[in-house]
Length: 165
Image 1: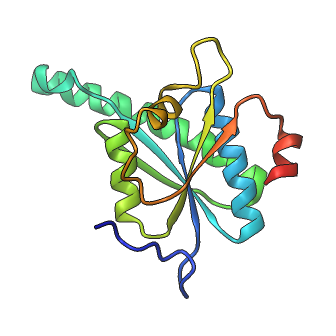
Image 2 (image 1 turned 180 degrees about the horizontal axis):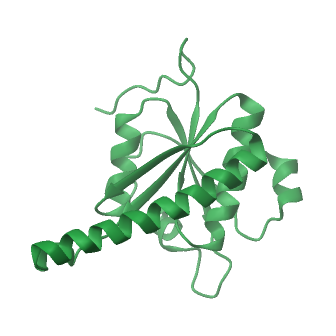
């Protein structure tokens, strides 16, 4: 049984979860989440997931080096995205780095943080389709998700998102 969301209880606030990666749609999701958080007194949580499937098969020193490099890269990405969110909304973002599968870690952080009330994704605009996370929604991978998902069209400009958020 999923934990009850607490985002509207005294001492809590609604958090918008954004999956942090290097895609253009990540910026659209971040922009929307930061604007909504600013307008509703909420917060933004940025989640970066290290996918190190090959690390366990490497020598211990190599695996540690792979993990350290991936962590440094994730932290640098979170620095940029957190700075962007602060510029958009004036709000400091929470930053989380996890290791494992993306869907698994998104579900895990939502379960652990009862203030996360909305997962914000953005659809890709390329010929490849809406992006793997949005596509996985259609396939039912997220069937037990205890929070709503907002999907921001990846083609929206800042001004268009401002009008919606």
